[in-house]
Amino acid sequence: MSAIEQIQQVAAPANGYNVQDFAENKRLQVITLSEETLTAFEQETQQWDVQALEYKPFLRFAIADKLDAICGGTLSPRLNQIMQNRDQAAFLLQYEGQPASDQSEFNVKLSTAVSHLIGMPNFDSMYGKYYARFTVRNEDNSDSYLRQAHRRMELHNDGTYVDERTDFVLMMKMDEKNMEGGESLLLHVDDWQDLDKFYNHPLAKQDIVWGSPPSKQVAYKVEHPVFFEEDSQGKPHMLFIDQFAEPQNMRQGLYLHQMGESLESEENCFGVRVPVGSMLVCQNHCWVHGRDKFVPHPGLERELLRQRGHFTKA
Ligand SMILES: [Fe+2]
Image 1: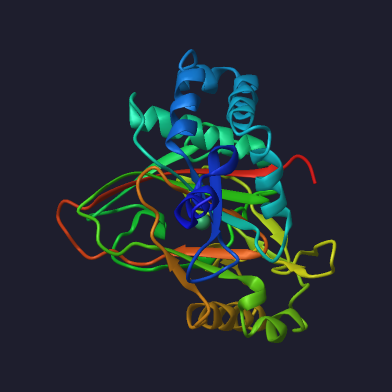
Image 2: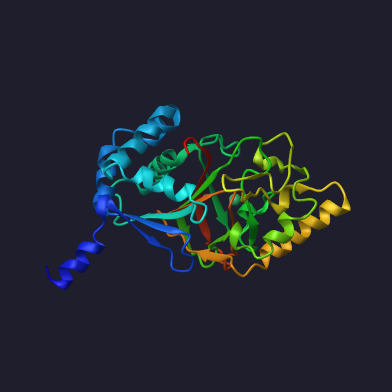
């Protein structure tokens, strides 16, 4: 075998995809589905449209199973292995080539397959489905930072103000126009240099009240500590978001304020550019995520699809 053949053999995706470390942070795994996988998945799922997936929850598992079968049954164990390994626990999944059919429909199907290979999405009350799609534009008059383009959305965990587990977050780029900036921001909790200071603080395990603005369509408030549990290795799981914490006294207020300041100045936070058709999936309790600000442009438009869910198997 020549040297060139050997290189090609190494580079060729086994089982229809390949996995690499993200250059800037090796915890994040980059999974690239080959064009053959993309085509096979498109063909084998063409009998189901997005409406069918919305109406019949079991089809979401069937579509996930198709994707796994196309990848020789290896994708599901690989994704779960990544998500259950605290040292990684995040991946960026992308594909080569372009779907022949409507790309937006295809992206909903692919994100559904991926979320159901690692668990099950929770009902998204803001959108009324198992997933949500929302657009960031240059102008905004909403009641949280979610859609505000010109400021950085601070590092946070999802699911802080709901009473159901949010083990993972999936964010897929559906569309973008005139976009500059707006990268996804990630920080692994174990890379946070001030973690010990806040985790060993007397308030680390004290209940905090968490509420949300009307657009979230969650009528109740919940109470839990920021460091609400430990994983199987005894390492902290976190649930924090600056906007929705409702401190009840000065000590809580200053603890949360200092935590926010510390996270925002953490140099180990890194940016990830998510191209259209790619999705970022992270374990929600050992990663915090955010979004950098966009460069203003009157035609700025960016659509994201998100799914937030719980693990169904270890
Ligand atoms: Fe979020």
